[in-house]
Each structure stands twice: as structure tokens, then as C-alpha cells.
Image 1 (cartoon, one colour):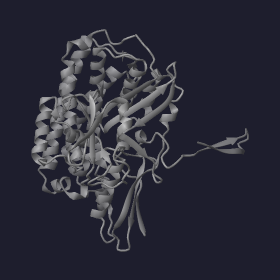
Image 2 (cartoon, rainbow, N blue to C red):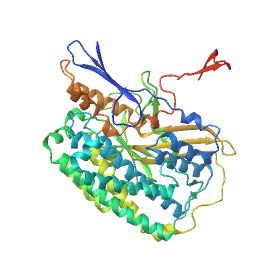
Image 3 (cartoon, rainbow, N blue to C red):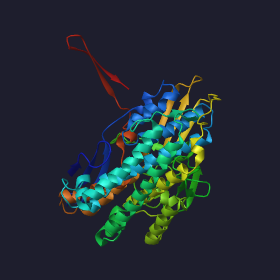
Image 4 (cartoon, rainbow, N blue to C red):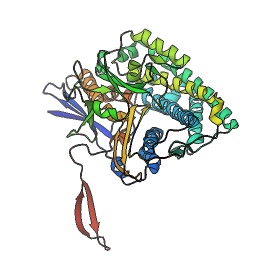
Length: 489
């Protein structure tokens, strides 16, 4: 059996590869999405005081630093038995939405849209951010980067750093906001709304008005039929990515399976170890493990921008709601299983997050000095759940009576999506590879099956994947001679 390997896969965060196996006729027999890197943050944080965990887990990834910081901060509140003040909640949410805008913008313009703006069959030397800027014009590219930079400025102002934030406090937020700073955030937020509006216009002009691209978006080659999970408010509306009221799960045909909050996630989600990847594969626990195939009866589920739109009844802000209605005017039947629509959903969310920044910055209460509480009571356990840009993110910690971490479990969006990603790659490979004919363009069409999920593999590989992962330790003497070789598990 002939094997085709795409390694490394491109335009994602982290390191992975795709293994495609062809039968004797040169057609695809099977394909696998393999994650070849490993990080052990679930072990790193054991023994650490809980108040240090948010700053530590923010270093998991330079892209996702804000979401790990926020989820662990919410778990920290529970462990210290303290609710954050109203102003602290609002400051945290502004910060989180700024992270959303800059993250979604980076993914759309640098990783996703080059396939459409430059073209899926263009040379890899052109099919990238630079090629995209050349297509849309340098002035337009400069304006996009400038506006995205405003989101980073908000992130830095509230988080303390542009990369790895430091503002988390049990029951609060370290940064107090002045009136001048509030006005500055409001001004930047309005620019971000314009970025959101422009991004949706680009998507409409470049993708929705292109018949060939719409065939890709609505074609079976990129259709993955799985269940969907997302966080919404008590009315089923996408209001707060920082603090969804409930995580709701719907079936592949749109029927409600169940919903949970906090530690109840353990009743719904199970994680399966695979022998060929360092990334575990979650599935719906109540349905049982049914393999990594999609379709009717599957126990796989997806998270992220498209599942959020599938689950939600609408958006809480007017411009995002208008875009949401246009989305459903196009697809009509829900839920949507065409994964290229992730990009459209992501553009809508960028606008929604920007609108939320403006709404929150218009609230004069955010300049209140009451940014934290001090009445701590260590409970020993906390679960922080946020709707990260890539999807539902769960941080679960247990501590001793002094607040030192004894156990940690992280389920990251890319981990949730492991099954759908694998199904998507297999379907695309079977569609595009025929009779053993493979070229650069065909392999990019296969890679286009994972890009909508916006992979973050450093984030997703926190515990051992295939069985137990050995870490080899070499002991040398002062002269550099090998004395002992150990295996640490």
C-alpha cells in the first residue's frame, strides 16, 4: 500500500502531519491526522500555588495565551471560594473580547483566507499573508494590521503584557481603569467594529460572490456530519464568550442532547487515547465510543465558530445578528456541516466581539476601583469554562487545603475537534486524490480540510497520547560521558 505524507502541515499553530494510504488503484483507503508534538502542562502545574497557574498556562501558546489565562483564572475564583466583583467581570470580558478580535483576525487573514483571496491552487510562495496583502493592496493590508493592533493594545492595557498577561487575581482583576483609559478603549473598540465590518465585506466579495469557491463551501468534499457543542446564555443567545451560562450539545440533526455547567462536563465528555497521535480524541460519553467516523449515530462532536452558530439562536449585538441572519438565509437548513463555513462564522464573531467591547466600554462602572474581593475560602476544586476563539475550553483543577495544585485536566478546542478534523481530512483526501494522481494543488485542497478548525497543537497536547509517553533522561559525568539512561513516565 502506497503512503503519502504531508509533513509538516502548514498554516497552523504547532507541528503535525497527515498520512494518506492509497489502495492498489491509487485511490485513498484511509487518512490520518497525526499530532507529533507533546507538552505536559497538566503535569507542570502540579505542586504550583493556584494563584500562579493563570500566568503559567498563558505560556502554553503565544497565540492562545489569553484564553488559557482566563479559563484558569475562572477556576481559581472557585478554588478560592470567591466571586469576582461586577467591575472585574466587565474588565475581564473586555480583555477577552480584545483577544478574540486579534486572534480571529490573525487566523482569517494569515491562515484561512489566503486559500480564497490568493487561490487554492496558487504557489505556496504566494498563498500566504504576504500574497494576500499583494492581492488586496498594501494600503488595505496596512489598515487591517493597524486595526488588529488596537485589539493587542487593549489586551496589553488590561492584561499587563501584549503576550502573557499578569492581571489575574482571585475574585478580581489587578488593573484599575481610569476614565481616560476607558475613552481610549472605546475609541479603539470602534475601530475594531470597522475591522469586523470590513472583514465580512471581504468574505462576501471574495468568497460568497465566487461560484467556484461556493462549490467548495457547500460541497460534500468538506462536509463533516457530527454533533455540536457551544456555550450560550440562558436564552440560547451568543452573548459572552468569557462567561457562557451553559454548554449546550445538539445532535448532528439539530436535536438537543443535553447541557452542562462546570464539573458536569465529566458526565458528557470522555477522552480516548489513540496509538497514532499525541492528541486524544474526545467523544460524547453517553453515546459511547463508536470510532472516528462521522455521520448518523456518531459520538464525535465539534466546537468552535460554526458549532456556536449551529447551537445559538442568535447574537446579542445588532451588526453580528444581521450577519447571522444572512448566514442562515444562505444555508437555510441547520445545523450546517460544511466546515469551510467556519471562516464565515469566524468573521461574524470578530464583529460581535468588537461590538461587545464598545458596549462594555460605554459602561462608566468599569472605572470603579472595586476590582477585587478578599473574602477567600479555599474549596479545593474549580472548573473554568470559556468559549475560546477555537471553541469550548475547559480547565479543571484540584488543590490541597493550602491551594497547591494536586491535579489538573485541560480539554482544549483542538482536542474536542480531533475526531471531526480526522474525518474532514479523510473525506477531502478521498475526494481529491484519484488514480494515484497527486500534486501540490491537490495536497493543499487536503490541507484546506483542517484549516477551518484553526488548529492549535501546542495547546491541545497536555497529557500522554498513545498509551504512556516515555521521557528519556540521560545522566552524564563532568567529562561528558554517559553514565545512565533512564525513562521517566
